Amino acid sequence: MFEGFDFHAFFEEIRNKKVLIIGDVMIDTYFWGNVDRVSPEAPVPIVSEIIEENRLGGAANVALNIKSLGAVPILCSVIGGDDRATVFLDLLEEQNLSDVGITVDEYRITTQKTRVISGFKHLLRIDEEIGNSLAKRVQDEFVEKVLSLMETGGINAVIFQDYDKGVITPQVISRVNKVALRKDIPVMADPKFRNFKKYKDSTIFKPNLKEFVKGCKTDATKKDIEKLTATGERFRQEQNIRILMITLSDEGILVLEKDAQHYIPSVKRHITDVSGAGDTVISVAALCHACGLSAAQTGTIANLAGGLVCEKSGVVPIKKEQLEKECGELLVEH
Image 1: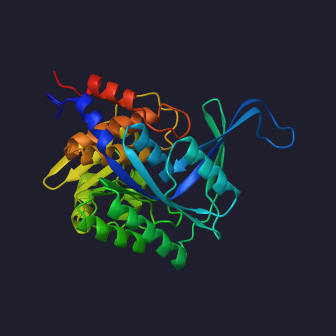
Image 2: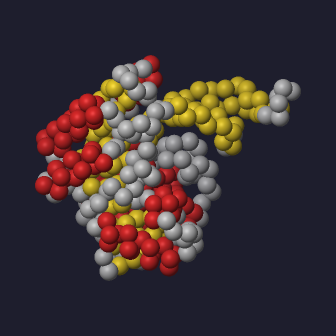
Image 3: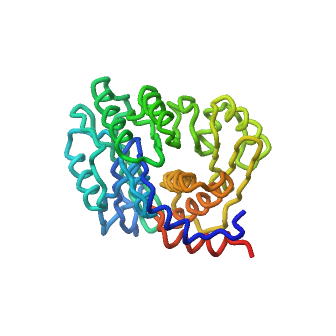
């Protein structure tokens, strides 16, 4: 599959790519601390010596992955008119990410996920969010901004990063897809549940196992590759999806395309935290496809990248140097 492949040239080519990311953004807040006793008030751990950290999450983590790999991300989302919005915009500035695609809705709140972690143990998560779809006025403003960027930006790929928080609606998907089809821009979708069957004609559709099982109403497990393949191929054809890529956690990735199926097992690793792995997989897959790699090559490199970020605690982007090194060590056929 990779005989004679020049990974250094491939990662250099990525620098020429520009990716538009549309989806739900959030602030990932971490309270890192130590636990050495149990509360006398209730049988719960007491966390002390806390360090607080804010990171970009959701679709913003996809933008971080694209940037970390050397390409140019353009992030498009809607945030609230609240104090958290200021925190989010400050985080964008810290990471040298543009806010040109960000729309503010004064009637929404900016999504924040707060995690309490001791060592490598995840103790608690608190989600503060609004899941309602965008109001029509805001949706129209947002879509016009996205379409303007598509018309003028020399975009090489579009990623829908859907977390069911309401930014992506059927109307947003439909209008973006029409322009993408006209301009021959590949569209990648990382779905959730609400819009699962709204991404017809996608170039790459990447659900995880939980999303796929629920969306296709199947009882297939991650080890039942034959059943997943049969169900996935029917779904791929019904939705006119070019490449269906189902992530199977520690079992790897199943990639389905016309007349071909590729099961790519995972590399054995010490898993610390699976948060954000899907963001990394769709980011790498989009860039691989934009550089002309085959579906099997794309799935293989994306599978490695998703595994690498699971070795880190919290939501973190893939590091280009680390991925390039592992590709060279594990994928080059001698």
